[in-house]
Image 1: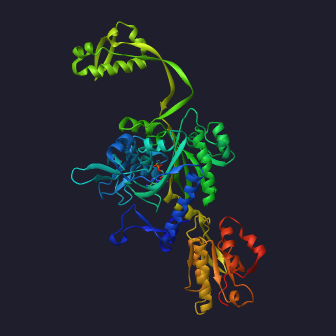
Image 2: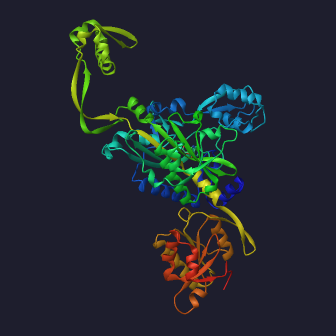
Image 3: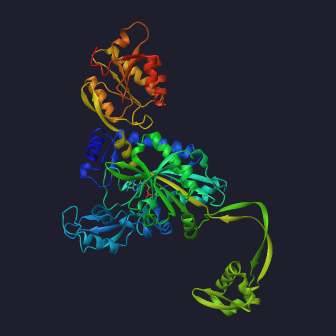
Length: 594
Ligand code: GAP
């Protein structure tokens, strides 16, 4: 669907719109209206169900503001940059890599050095999209995407809004591992806001400055932990491996998760496992799988922490959009926090049987080191200990050389007190590796709207409807009294709506305008079932009845009010509407009056 039509529908029907309109608007911030907030919440619930509950993982909620040392450790301060080029004429800022990709054959300009991007801008005479002035000669600079803030008054601590929910999980690992009783593998999830000061926000929910992520950090022992791959081995996937992207005639690989892991196309079985789980999940929430693929990152495209990464991409308005990333982060994050933080980011891995090993130790004679090295004596002793572990052979010579703060010190070997002891070890401390499925909730919502957008003709009128999966649709059902002039109809409609709400359904009630208009309004927000209370339903002998209309086919059946909640619940859980048309009387579509 055209972007403009989606954005117009999203605004008109209360899915999402630019925030702070009364103050001129703020680029990169969107408010979810009543329909959009419900749709987003349902996507998050479906994600929680699949990636937290069904996987036996645990969810946390951590603060969005974190102190500066966290981001020194994580590498975000140093490397979380985009390429910025500013127009010398109008002052507008642009993503230099995006301008180059739009104007040339280069697919991954982000991976190029800044000077090369400057050259491409000059050689291709790329102009400012805002005012048309040439950008040749302008510097391409690194722009850090984190929002900075101050924690506390005065000279309080420097902080940042987290650019990914993941860091809130990593920094709490020392406590989280206790909750898992130190046993790997375990997974921690978090759904919440992340912030990036994007240079050029665009595309509705696609590139925002505040957005919601749903992330899973799977902590594993890379030597012993395998995923339950058999559960998804037959799941079919369309892969676009890095090697295919760089060939002139590169193509997709249509394969299964099991085959792709077995032949090494997907290097990590854990990444393969979660691609399979994600594939099933995307199908469940209504992503059009003909407009979906998994694309492997090219080497220069990977984030600073990722050893391998695959993106889930959906086609929206002719472009491929990254809606989730599946990264093998290795021990990058936990090692960094272990080195920078004051806590331990390792787990103790117990051996099946205790092992007796030889351990090189030193017991330096400090009465000699003290006078010889003064203030450096303790550091020399530590350096001797490290050397003994790393290179015990070094102590075979008469003197041993160690380095402290760049200075080499010679120590007599017999002063070092070197010995090799036999010790019994019950285990070792290891740094877990991390596999990370990371989903953008807003991008998923926009994909669902784009893929659900349909037009057809009902009763000789063109209509627009959203064929959203019932699980994520903002409302389960809508209830209408056919006319408001008859109190018997409004009373029964009120009761039907209340009963359905009491049964746990999200129900709209609409009594304004013609019944045709009311159907169209619900069609446009994707309500899967409309329930109409008409005179036939109260004037016939026997049980009260209502009509139930299915959104996509516009087919209707008449069924007893007493059966309504049960039948709708079954339909919402996946039973087909045809099953109802077999059991109940069918009705002409979109009745106007009776
Ligand atoms: N922890 C890993 C991580 O943050 P990412 O690929 O940078 O990885 C994960 O982000 C997902 O978050 C993306 O696949 C995308 O869906 C979403 N996302 C990233 N930046 C976004 C932005 N500026 N606006 C909306 N969604 C964004």
